Length: 284
Image: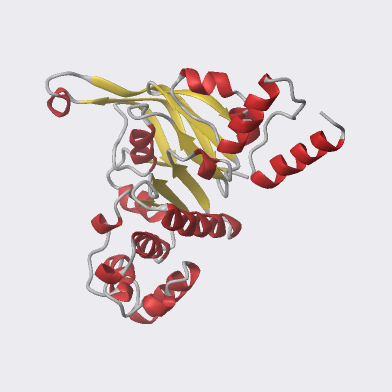
């Protein structure tokens, strides 16, 4: 896979005006590459810098120092920012902040209309986007009639209709109930299957386990970076920086600590059940 987003020695300092008279380095001399077609989860406690990082990815913020490029384009170049944001879309925490129209299909059509896309192509994109998030039957509904998970899927469809190469989900499941989170995660996994670059900022470890790669932020820097098994097997290190691990990983960790011979890096219920059954079959 080729490099799509690249950060080189990036620092971002919120101005004194934004921080009650204090400067605050949210990102500190950070370098990171995101490969095209990958699914990357970024986790960290509140204030770790993960949401600031997300906004640097598509030029909502530009670095105080260092360089961010998207598909080779420097995000600090104002002449290129339109092209950057066409390539990298973002879905925010609260779907109500992204829904602007009175019906679902009008809302999904809003972005491509503003991009100057031909009406016939807009119709095709809207239908395709709604189908991809399983919301076609709601196209004539008012967004106010939808559940939180359904609203978030409409917000995702609006980004898909722009046909970006990458979608960033900035804690997009934080305000949803378990069913809503499940619906949005299923949509994210389908986007990954289609080859789209996906970046998921999340507090939920059970979502992060589905990624190809997990980046752990702490104090504006990268604390850990690896595949989910590599990262979540380091239970004690994660807890030192106030992060949890998936429930099944925690269960296996506690059992290993009590002397049960279970493999490290268990992430999913099915594999954990399988490991426990083998353990019981051989009598521990």
